[in-house]
Length: 292
Image 1 (cartoon, helix red, strand yellow):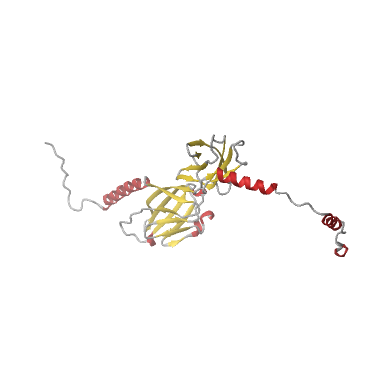
Image 2 (cartoon, rainbow, N blue to C red):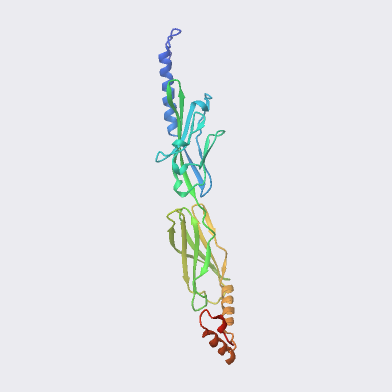
């Protein structure tokens, strides 16, 4: 059976040059491995994002010998710690005052996160020693930014009666990314029916947040005056549900309003009419000319 044996070497045969070569080989291997490191991060709109570095300082190199910085996909610097001191001079204007560094867990916080902040970020670590600056570590974080949509709200587009049918809209606002679907559920005593809504989506140019709405127009169900309608907005982070909308309540309110409008108002007597006429003829600006 064959076996592999190492050739003996004389003591001291491993020269300083070969030792340096071994170190370089190990460094290149570590460099290649570090470059493939990647992590997905998520943050909520207007909140704080954590962008970790995960650098293992196995040699206990002092922060006073390290250059640590984060940059975005456009190579703009978010934060730099240069030999133990923060260096804002190299930070891009859009990130000034928005970052902080947690030295205990090697994580940079990006505050007041906006939708525009989504994308790739790199943490880069250099060692500044007697022989110059040496690259030690690099890691990429993919940041996703979410914004929760508001609670869906149902509003009638017209009076709901047996003749007019059900015409209403459901809306939700200030969310990101855009919703996947909006649908309505109509419940009566005897049935439950689901209707898809056609989404109308708009986006704010500044915040990049979305507003969404959908309309429902269906005949009123037969043999009932009470329909409970619920709107559901399906987003990437979950499904939002509107408060239930009851057509019986709306119908009763509509009938009460109609009754109030139809109440006969008393006619004005001749004296009141004359008062109004005389007042309307008062010259402008002459307060003493009013007579009753």
